[in-house]
Image 1: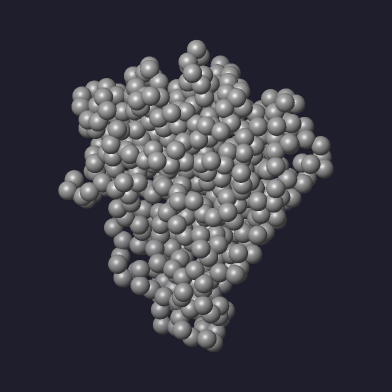
Image 2: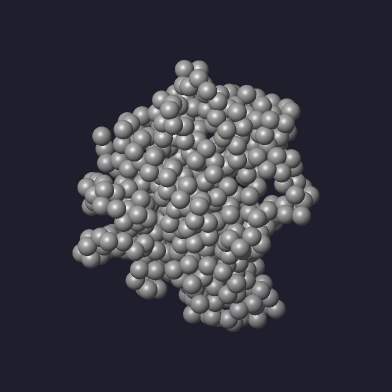
Length: 546
């Protein structure tokens, strides 16, 4: 059995791939409310972060040009007055895009304001801002995505706007069959399970534990990191438009709890075969048509057989829950820890129960036959929460504890989770020997340095490999930025903050398409993302098979 992924795996757009926490302050990226952009902006040769830049952060742009000599750049205020100028640095061919590019660096200018434009060789960028609160709105809009993905709750116009208000989905109200009493696929079990709640997958009405586990971890981890940095107020109570606002609990934890409750409902009950394991997924018997609101879905729902990977996702996410939620709801924390312990024990008893790749009717298969990384991640979370020697030994005895490939070349993701264990052991206080703790922390900074080297070698400063652009690769970019941000937390070195911020530049327009990949942010932003109930294309469109 291999110990690390040797090639990139296809990533369908799960919540964890649409939304990945980046900076210690809780910065997230995801499609927000759609806005109509300018088609002309997409053709400009001067590619910038279309939202803007932090006054004290890096400010670089990529210029598509066949020129081989340096070009003069000017930074102009909204009035047209030039406030800074300099020369570009020729980079030649950018391998991933095939474009010939140069880079303009105007980081030395630290003014603030709106409507700045960068001009190079007769071409002008789209207007952008320079301000310290640049990402505050994006953070809350990004987090709103999870609320919109909730299953089993109505959406009030006061929270989501009239265009997105809708009844609860899959609670058994006709035409729904409901998720409150879901049978298994034939031959999997002879009972029904209440699996209401949770988040729908980004692309369909299914709910997947291996996506939910890492998505929940990312959300709760963003709060843990923000709290360590003293910036948790940005993710605190009433910071988001969620029904629970005002309850004294940070809103980011309220949102994550919606999924955590679902993940624990997916656990096989005591007295049943595979007790303590987690069902791999639940979705429609056949692919859901599009566009179709969840409350209008008439199909029968099915539970799919338990898997070791799903069970370990539950163990890891629930163990993290027990640690972070204890200050707000000790009873819920106890429930999470009990579920995590049961899941760990069940996974140890069933270490090779894999979800079959053939199980792809009505939902993604999410097959994963390498689960040693999930064992490492779950052990690390349980150890960080309990300080118990059994979990410590399981983590330190894992080949992933010393493997140089824990931080995959393609970043971490739902199928590659060893890095999550490393990040937890590097940052959450624990009883590892100082030398081991320092080695773990060094592995984080080494991975981050590798991403920085890769960024320096590319014209668009992207941390993924030249062949790393696949479905969901923007999530990989953001996940790499988390590693950079944690390296910055561990060392205080500015270069890691710089790298994390430059990934935002890529996601928000400094890329080969000259397009912001975050809907509603930037002059030209992505539209019509693959989605079952937000897809504007009429029902005559054929539903994809994956």
